[in-house]
Image 1 (spheres, one colour):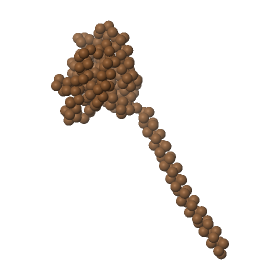
Image 2 (image 1 turned 180 degrees about the vertical axis):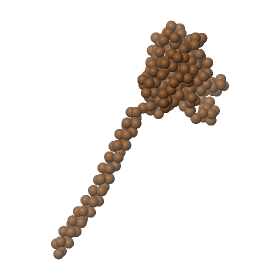
Image 3 (image 1 turned 90 degrees about the vertical axis):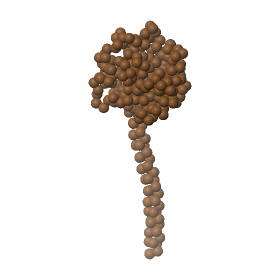
Image 4 (image 1 turned 90 degrees about the horizontal axis):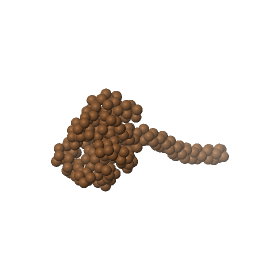
Length: 252
């Protein structure tokens, strides 16, 4: 009888040991499996980047006006596409400006750049661009690249440039695919426009879609890459313009 009790006690101890450490091991295995699938899901989410298209009129628009937006989108893991509707050939230096834009996009981590060089879409302060042509170019690009959001100038074009305004007219009236979001870069009054980072306080109150760039060196370098355009008044623009530091977007 004592022998059976001893055996029973040994078996009970072994069962207790197996149960105790078996549960610990199984818990570790469960946690490992859960962490594995969680990391795999997060990895897949990172791979499935949302594509956002910024539509500009000229090389250097992205650096002068949209830098805070581009920085924000990069930080949020969006895939940024840039569609520039002209090569800025007003002074017959279109090829130079194309090369500068390509270099700037590399610096700003924009991997998807398209530059349009069409006889009807030439850099000009006086010639109006055909709206239908712009719409066809943008609509085709959206469909071919699975674009989920479009950003461009507003109706005042920041500087009242007719080419900027044409971007707005075309995109604000084009046919939209389902779930496509369209935003325009807000034009402010001249006081706010040249109040640099100080406009942050007003912008944060008036608009929820606020993007901020606090890196003045990044703003300077971006414009400096466009060397053919980096004249004294554009240097002053980088220092004093809110658009080097602040973007506010309006959904339309």
